[in-house]
Length: 322
Image (tube, rainbow, N blue to C red; front, side):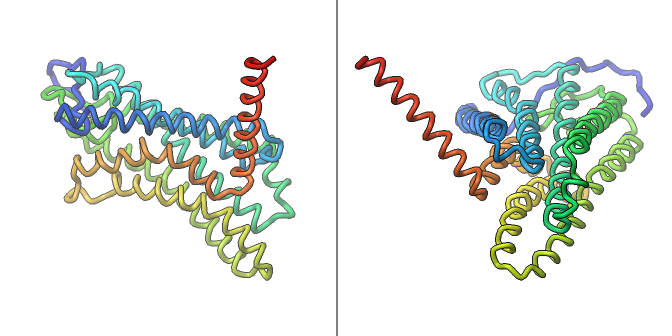
């Protein structure tokens, strides 16, 4: 972490996903649409959960926090990326780079831990239903979510501290579309071994604990579901887990591919393509996954949309004819 004598860089240039102007314009339209769907779908999910009494349960409380995290997570990356598609000079000040990295890391960790908390919630509901209200009390879960956010902020502060210790002197060109640690590490002119060891160790512990919680929860749930005598009970339990398991597989699979692949097979261009999925696409898919596979959510959504359409129709009718 030694600091060398050099000219300190004050800004960076993000190369983005493509250098071709026509491609950038097409990507702007595509990702603007994706970001719009992400914000509308996730905020819609939060609103639906808050308005419908059927969803005032811990499972949907965690889901609403996941949707909130998705909005913040996507918003930490998408606005700057969209602006760069329309800009000739894709510059970002060093301080803003650090700020974006801090918020991105914060909500990435929130996403990881909330997914593991949801797995544990499913485990208790399926394997210990009689003890569910005791183990997963409302006050305890509120405190748990608060701890998740505090832990994420602490991790991000530590992560950011390790980043600003890097000595950056030569190039200010970053082959990525958002502010992440690996591409910045590649620019460092100082010995980065300690930074890498510290960050990887801390990240592996946080990610490893979440993955272990999920694996143990699903191993017990799978065993319990197989022993259920009621076909209806098995179907209900399986459908409850299917949406969450799909989200877990997509999110953790992409993270492991990017950050834990062997260095010899490491390609920044490949990383950028994979990063698009877990930073831009995944937050959009999350509410769709949970709503399309959940009958209660679909019914509530149809009811809400139907009520809104009827209300608008009555309003238009009264304005025109009364």
